[in-house]
Length: 353
Image (cartoon, rainbow, N blue to C red; front, side, top):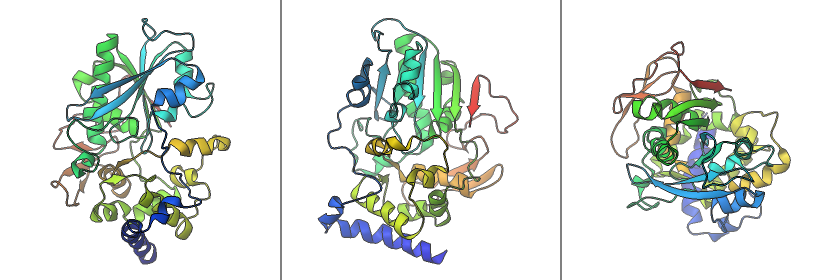
């Protein structure tokens, strides 16, 4: 373990520092991940309007000041101004954004499929993603801008989305979450004022426990404590499309793990990915997230068993005590009162893995 660990330390400390004095990192001939699109405008204009669907951009503010992007999509022959079918909110996964629901053809993309079947489709984008719009007072260069994990995404971002959609439609909302979007849903639905506005939730690849993960790149990151190293190095934002992030991932894959198929290296084998769309996938993904968010999720992989304490020992802000359970973290700070065992019923929630 010493060799990959020292390699990671070298990559994390050397490449970010060196790239500041060497512009060649921004013009690498080939990289596993291309840099973020420089012509980015809006999700509606990039992916939804070109497919022939009506789409409107909305901006909402969370209680802690983040400005989130929401998109509202209707069927090709629909009218965004008229009353429509039941509202449904789609929540993306880790290092993803709302674009993930539209990257295949209209017949293969859930956002379009739901719109064509009469749903009032809403697309959520959490803080830090490229489709959201910063903060009322913080810059993305401020470390406080990145001082959050999935807990804040649940209690602030998802709460704001549900409240906003409910206020506009005056109807209960269906929620579809994928991966990170499922743990957000689990946590948010512990709050009675949020739960009463949700009709049902369908959770795709739900995060209830993570120690079974075998994807090689993820296991390497966990086993070498990459999350702790990143925090110790002073990084708060994780952006694998930045200069240093691209170089880091390229070198991890060149030196430590086989990433010929980078998606399988991260997610595990997938029978049904459309490989002909990979170039388009990587134009938009991955999105930024926070180092603290990754740290909390990695703790779910490292700490096995029920009700096991997880201690955050990184130096920014204060120590926090977490309790890890098979459903999701219950923290002393928020005092979640959700089901603590997998056998307790979770009404109106569909788990799909």
